[in-house]
Image 1 (cartoon, rainbow, N blue to C red):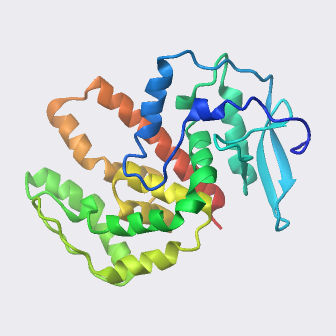
Image 2: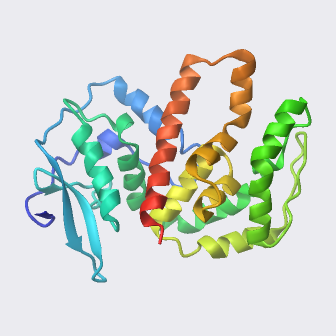
Image 3: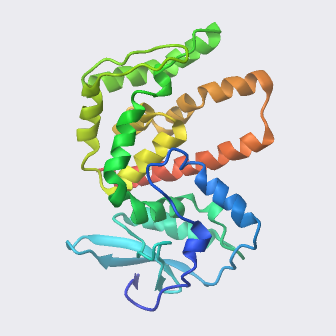
Length: 280
């Protein structure tokens, strides 16, 4: 295993490759795709390294940290922070993304790297705002706004959404109000404060992952169900896509929308990988 202190840094061009991230903004799930489209207008940077490998070092508290080495040199984030994670498995997945790049470095094919970059660069400074946004999502969570017709859609939503509501009510100590139409309902603040306490001590990687899952699915409750272990990733994704799938059944699938969905699923899977790697 290579020592992460050896060698100089690889090219400091990752800010231009991966762009910036502002934690807490509601369209964060779309930003990487938009950046990828912008990047497509100019040539992608050439792969400048022969091999990506796993590096290990000791953190300030004596903990083991793992990262990516490109020809033995540390990878840094767009903000020029050394990329390290507290999980060997997670670092190995990062290495695999870098090693999978062939002639060019394509950030669209590196969702885990983008998520880890954004987490290291922005999550700690935005921790309070991110948790506030998660709590506020409980008032607008789409699974609290089921359809009233047609019956087949109503039953499908009920099958996938009601168990999530029941589990969240059990864990957060309250009842969620369900409503239909355009008028928003205000949920009991008790459940929001309970969720805030549960997630106040998440490390930056876990918080970045649950926030990403929330923005990608549009639901804090589905993010909670995944973090809690109540639902697996595929079940969460299915629940999140019910309305979208219904429209596809009715009207067919648009090619551009299909590409966006595939991109979002890759982002989702990266966040799931982070949670799985750091689950105690």
